[in-house]
Length: 367
Image (cartoon, rainbow, N blue to C red; front, side, top):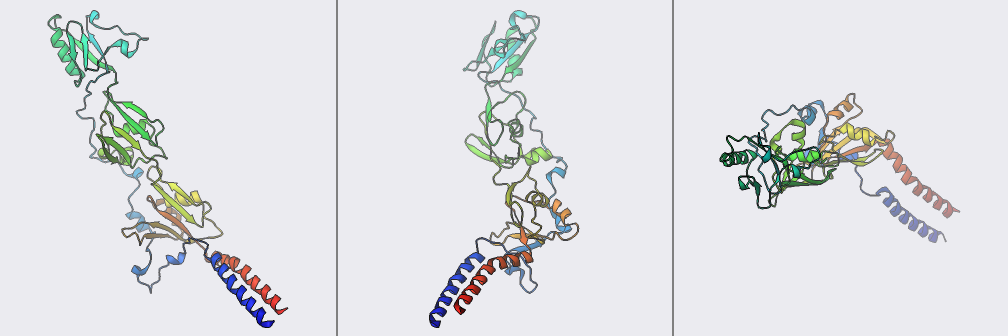
């Protein structure tokens, strides 16, 4: 009988040990020990490159886009721009002192009634002149041609030609914008940043760092952050008829918060900006479980197998000031480590049920 009791006891011990092992390793975990720097260990043997967050490191960081003054070498995109008339545009032509050649205008008249619509062949009909080809010409070129031809019938004619309805040239805007639609190209130069802004693409859900312009079947990415916040036109371009602009959703430019925080989350970069203090304030540090001396920012390095680990010791005076200046990058992972006492408490919580069960088995066996 004693031998059978011992066998049952050993069998239960083995089973409970296996179950306890499962409870001690419930899933993916990051341990602060993975980031501990031991002077006796070679830095290259560590799984990360540990970099303390210090004032000198903050100074070396690129400054915020919002604090950098505008660039001085910005180019003027509108230089030399002239609108070329196309089919379905409507022209308004005025011949001064000759009302019989001018279509009357009025407050209740539409643009089509106020002018001459360009035909699909690119022509208009004008009295005394006949059929005139206007497609591909500027309003000044059209005025000069009509002036020359009317001078045969009118002494020193004075003309004014302008486009009153722009229908021939359009661009398409789609994606994470508030107003996806077709937008006309007019005599006012239309830049990529202009149409994205007009469509409501400069919002927190849109990725304005990766705007895609499709022209003649070729895709090209543009980063409009510098255009909006620094006046740098190097990443801007004038649009042409048939261009398609796609503004992707801001799903890539995020940082991830985990560990001893109240709300683990994936937070988007707002206007390309997000500080460590922003993330900690949004997620909230668990005051009872977190170790303020071990707040890490994991960032992908040149070697994917060895990321950078930036360490913030929030127990030091002024550490939170440094956190407000530490700029995060897309796909950074902020990890708030567990305090030593919390790890011990959790170990006891997982261990005690097993120990108590063993005590119960021992008592039953003794009885």
